[in-house]
Length: 207
Image (cartoon, rainbow, N blue to C red; front, top):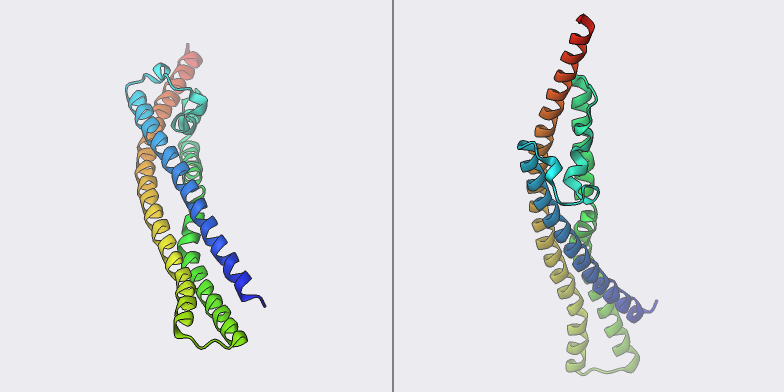
């Protein structure tokens, strides 16, 4: 077993996880900021019955896409509206949580990778010392320091991932609460439309 090779691979894996962490955080932060802004705009327009005045392209608007089924003039029963409400809410949560599991995995795996890297580094150090017969304490200390660097790097990456995950989690919670309000308002609008359609049908039947 080549301990040095494994030690280097572990370092590359930790650096790759750090890069992946940064990419996911930036992408999710931008998406959450955009979604939060659009949700507030759509909710305000829905409350004022001015959805047609939205300047943002509706096809690229996650908030509008979520309530679009409620805007169709289709009579629905109470059960159908409840099922549709739950369906749209669950779909929205799936979109928000995309990629978050990777951050959670990095939080758990980075310290373990660092510890494994340290173990491999120590093995490599002692193997080299045994092969060369060097007994100089300074060289032993240098090798141990390099090995322990892996643990420090793993913990540092885990801390960054933890902070990023908690920040994004707070944004998800905030957006989710706004989604609930938006869906409730959309459901009220659909309920009013369904009631109106039923009255029109009754009037035609008895006309």
